Length: 114
Length: 109
Image: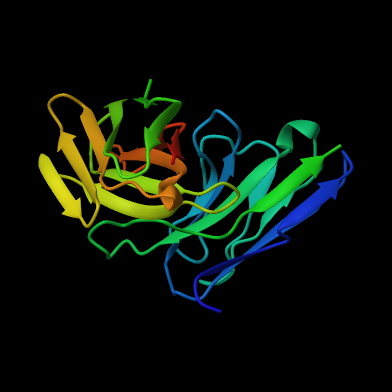
């Protein structure tokens, strides 16, 4: 693989269930991010990690948790899903040593909570 | 609060030129990005401006005026494949990315 891989690409989930969205990158980027994208709104940062072993809260962290055990993997967990968490979730990474620091995105995970 | 404004939707004709504007009010500024996002796909990086002026990259150019809190993305010789959403984003003083809601560009033959 080259880039960022997310799984699953799509999922329908009953409210109250636990769900983990997986994200793996092979670019050896230190920084990784989870965003959600909803119609009419900009991308909103859920959690981020500047390097393996550290994580931080973004703009909309409630109801979500992350871990960063190594450089490549950055899973996002919904402990008890609610309908307002229906969204498209994007994982992204960046190389802070690059001049622009642009983000590289995964293909997204479309989650529907009923 | 921090805010980025861009038009919700624009329509242009194949072969023409279109300018997508972005204005921002952020706590500090450390660069402005434009991303392209086709429907159902991930955003992809288009351009980056940190100094005032015009950056040209093929058919796409991006302009920045830091004093006015303003940027635009200029697309020339429009092609049908340019139909997409264009996202403006700004790095604030803490290098947090602030995103606009995106401009949906519709290209008509």
